[in-house]
Length: 173
Image (cartoon, rainbow, N blue to C red; front, side, top):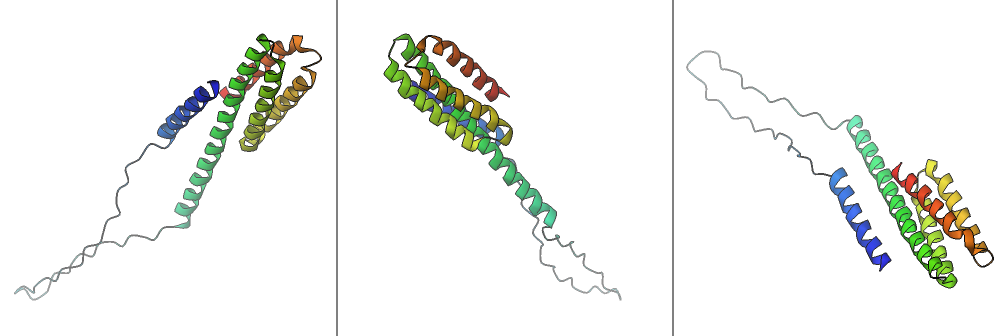
């Protein structure tokens, strides 16, 4: 059940970010040059010249490079959003671990800790360079908790709550 809620929340968050960041903008079509019409000569001795519309300049390299930068920015934003989704998934899974520890189900807690580690791996793959250090630290702490779970489970819940708070602070930053 928590996975379904997490998936639904992730979809809604993703759609909200897409609606917010990628709101459609009005695009004006380029002006189309009208063919010049012929003017019938008037009885005046000098004919009037027909106005020629200015030609539209071809796209410059500046426009193309700006477009490429926009695409790179959007790709970076997409990677950041995926990283946030995986971090929030890890937070939900930590809540599941805490529930398993309260029920004294160490097997379920161990399996869910492995899922937390995998979610942090995926978040690490999509994260920006400045976030890779903290995420790697979270992975190390989860690995240590998993190793010590059978030997000393009494302090695990406190450490998991601390990791959960730190992950949420990383998401908010």
